[in-house]
Image (cartoon, rainbow over all chains, first blue to last red; front, side):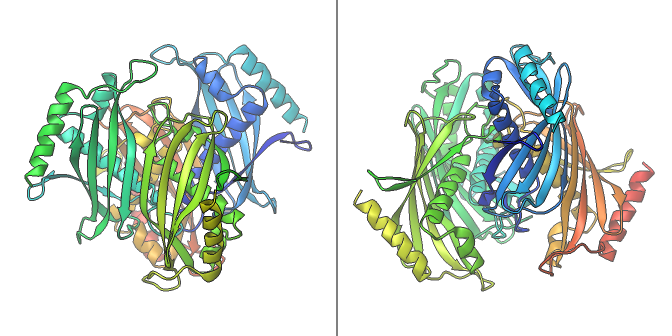
Length: 148
Length: 148
Length: 148
Length: 148
């Protein structure tokens, strides 16, 4: 599941028909869904599945997004989503992503999302520190990536 | 907002780019979104906006769907969604829909959704009766439709 | 990939975060996406991948949908989509689906979609017969299912 | 349709139920859909509807995205999408967006998308210059915005 040379977490997916648009390629907003899928599987692999975090009253909400597209993806294409932690703050974490064709390794797009940690148990959902255990797992992964 | 001759509630929308697929037409699952839009606006017009119902702890969840497609819709096309109440039970309500081209009145699709009323304040979300006021408003609309 | 006892094709998927709605469960229109995913993988397994059919100028378009929901699915839940051919006409094919929790086998929903075959090489996209090879593969699968 | 003080094009929309996620707010990828809606209506208002451009064999494809979120939007909330041209190249155009609550003017998010012009009539869809008339309309709008 992880790429030894570069310390990315990797997950595989296939483009669904409804994710294409009339241009015949994946509609651009859907790459954010693929990046979320990469993040979800990455956090699972780190032992910190997001569903468990949220059920403990802690939310991670997207605050910033950036994406750059290189080549279009098409229906039924097999894609590899690479995910890593690129910055870790007290109450925020930034993930970086690369999406590639699984067979040819052609670059499809890259991007990043910054997530802020919030307290779901309070009605106003104020910012809060990342839980200690989550922070440790993300930090270990970030360091591993840094030496890639 | 309502069609006098046939007692449908009517709402207008435009097809978004991301709602098309590589066939060049609206992806079929999105017609369920349009029907929900029709239902949302219809309930607003009846004085029973769904957001208010849900914030009072009452949910309406889709239990059955049926749709039949006649002609494809395309990007930027103006569509009219017609909505009416077709059956009203103690704890369920069925809405019927027609979707037409707003300019030519060409028939695009028709469908129905049966919704069950549930209690959002209990963790198991058991079925419950429709709230009295909601029921009255839906009943008045159903009767009006029946005489159309 | 197939269930010997009942002759369904089976595929696995996980619920994505963006597929949930504020009720905390999968938004109902997304089950049509899951059923399409089941159909896509089923046709691949039959040796008739839909991407290849379409690139040969033949389209299969959804004409009718029916769905019935039994239990809600949630974020990150593992689902099994069962697919089979339930009726095969000269120019149409109907698929039936069951969606279950992959661990508990709890029933989530069931449905069917009727697809019509069209000629993508003509501008009006008229109906056409199912291509012979596709028809044979679907027929063999339907018969296998029928003896399940 | 346009805001005199700041020379933005403005369009209105309402959050749909299926656009929310289990956090109870709009799923972040859907803001890209809202921004596309703003761009679509803006180009219509400029006399250059995108559907017509594409049917003339010219495509505008998203190459870069950036978004920053300030406050969550909720089901049925009325939003104003403000759109303007922020940079115009020979073969690219960048749009900027602000999304606000229509009643309180609370800031929801802001973002930008860079689009590249491509030739849809050639199979490889190579980059091409913006068509002259489109360019003039975008330029006039950009200049108007610049003096806002």
